[in-house]
Image 1 (tube, rainbow, N blue to C red):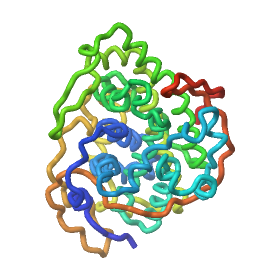
Image 2: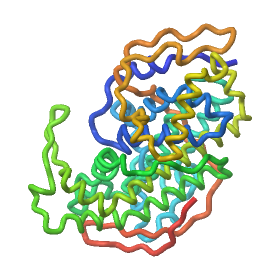
Image 3: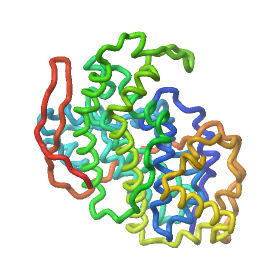
Image 4: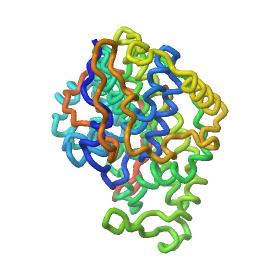
Amino acid sequence: MKKTLLSLGLLAGLLGPAAPAARAWGVVGHRVITQVAVYELPTAMQAFYFRHLPELARLSTAPDERRGQDPQEGSRHFIRLDHYSEDNPFAKIPRTYDEAVEKFSADTLQKYGTLPWAVLDAKQQLVAAFRARDTVAIILRSAELSHYAADAFVPLHTTVNYDGQLTGQTGLLALWENQLPERFLKDYKLDGEESKVLKDPLAAIWLVLQNSYGFLTSTYDLEAKTSKGLKAQTKYTFSHRFGRTQRRYSDAFADAYEKEVGGMVAFRLKGASPLVASLWLTAWQEAGRPDLAQLLVPPKLSKEEKDHLTTQLKAWKANTLYQDQLLLALQKEKKSVDADEIKAAEGEAAPPPPPELVAPAAPKQKAPLTPAATAPPAKAKAKTKGPEGTNKQKATDFTW
């Protein structure tokens, strides 16, 4: 029996406004990744996810927005791999959470990041939501799973030098994952592969992290190459937001850096959606493939909804979502959520109308991390920079 816990509008309203700091892929990146993932789902899941696409996209940034209220939240967004070994961290870190705790302690993992296990935990929570036929939980857990999985595609989420602060490149994180995607999204290809059931989700996310770690060399070196000959007043600018003044890379520098590194940023952003969709599909499969049409009221998409979906799918395949102004991340949000967007199953009362939406977010969760099968250690190729110079790492690049 489907449970009606709390409207998504109320979930969003409870946590208040978003935190000001730039994190992860930013609002635009996370919501674009989540939206495109819906297009990559099989028909049996797509209607349900499309019906709730606005809430799903909105809530995909909730994990960042609750960092200030949940002290455990921050570590779920990264893993500082080079803390464990600059030579080959993938040979040093156990793949499962329990084994990693036994080797390094829970406090160490909390300090240096739990991203791969946060992805697995979010997937398991989505499995539970599917089994419970809980519409609100399915959307919320799907959005959170999308966020953590997408974070794994950012190279700077895998290193202690996450903002270039150790190499005189402070501000690099916001430049790479916020400024470039927001300025050049129109040039990125957003078409992608269809979802597939993952035989080993934990191994899949470790391979993504391995690839991200391998991109660190060019992330730093191309910034240094772009900086040559530029004066500080050209390279940086100052912005006053949220009551404080901050130095950031200038738009002129971002434009020049995009020419050097933009292909990598676009490639990582595009690759995130198929993994997100595959994780959703895998969770649904593990839950016994529940009939999601039974959670829709009415159980089928209306003609108008079908037309919208058809239009968006065509634009996605033609890579014209941006040009056709179909990306939700670039559209002005509604101040409230239609109470009919989430309805109760037959025989149950519909959820109450939500209050005015202040900012998308989600309630705190402190579920234990769920261990999964161990993936074999793999080699990686990367070069990181620290206070004493450049460290090269031998290895092989992988794709999943």
